[in-house]
Image (cartoon, rainbow, N blue to C red; front, top):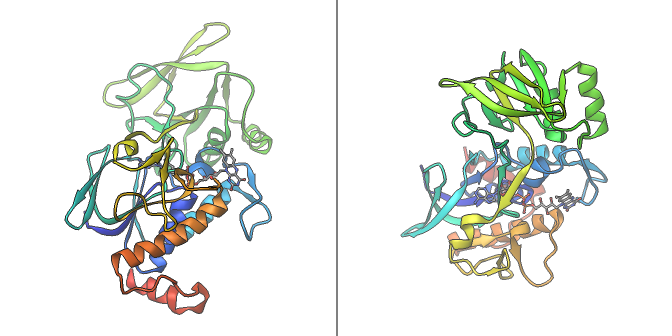
Length: 335
Ligand SMILES: Cc1cc2nc3c(=O)[nH]c(=O)nc-3n(C[C@H](O)[C@H](O)[C@H](O)COP(=O)(O)OP(=O)(O)OC[C@H]3O[C@@H](n4cnc5c(N)ncnc54)[C@H](O)[C@@H]3O)c2cc1C
């Protein structure tokens, strides 16, 4: 892996805006996120809720805001590492090497930690053989729709993500069954109506009890929680959408100065480790507000100080993006 100028740990709204801004300032960028998709809390926790307090948007659905941030944050072609968690930060001669849960070693000159409340890990169903079939039929969220093409899918969950994936995979899957432990849904009413209109079979009051297959998943056993009736269901894939747990986890052991579970930063968003910055919900300073709007501003300031950290002759003030030259120069520098 190439050494990049800055590695952004956490691809939530603040990390994505930092990625855009670092690209604008001509830096090479890598983003790491433990989830299969970018967007952080916007995508994972409340995709169907409206956000009213992001400047320039009187009202925007969280998933649409995430989509726009992803488009903006990836336009300078950052290296994006998904479904992997940064577990170790090791100082080296040119900066740091970040080690990940999947065994990658990612060299970087500087680091911006935008880890929110910590690495999101999908909640598992908790049945035997679930880990064995991960990526061999069991999926937590959807990174690549083509994985589900022509497949018999069971989608587990009753929230926005489950309903979103029923709608999004409807055209590519051979069949979809929604499995949910209750008959009440947390999903947006509009999504529920749309899924009902698609005629998607729903197994309500059912849970997955067993997973079967040799090398790959081929079937599940489901149980009705009220009647205890058991059914064998042949499936190629189970797409699990029953929430997330987050934990700052290994970041706590990186030698960063912490206040509770937030990383202390100065007015340049530098932590106590040289070349390591922190922004967004994960950072703290006097009068910190945990909002997307304030996180965006923190990202801009941090990126500009990363720039002068890497190149002390660079100007702190980036110029205006509307003046053309900044966008064009950054764009040509990355291609
Ligand atoms: C229901 C709800 C509604 C909200 N509504 C609003 C609102 O209307 N307006 C508003 O301003 N704010 C709102 N917020 C708060 C807002 O979502 C957060 O302030 C914002 O998401 C913080 O962005 P972030 O990029 O700092 O972190 P996050 O969005 O939390 O993203 C952090 C990302 O970092 C990843 N990560 C963490 N650690 C690691 C690691 N070690 N390795 C790899 N990846 C890692 C996580 O998986 C995650 O994807 C709301 C929050 C909730 C829960």
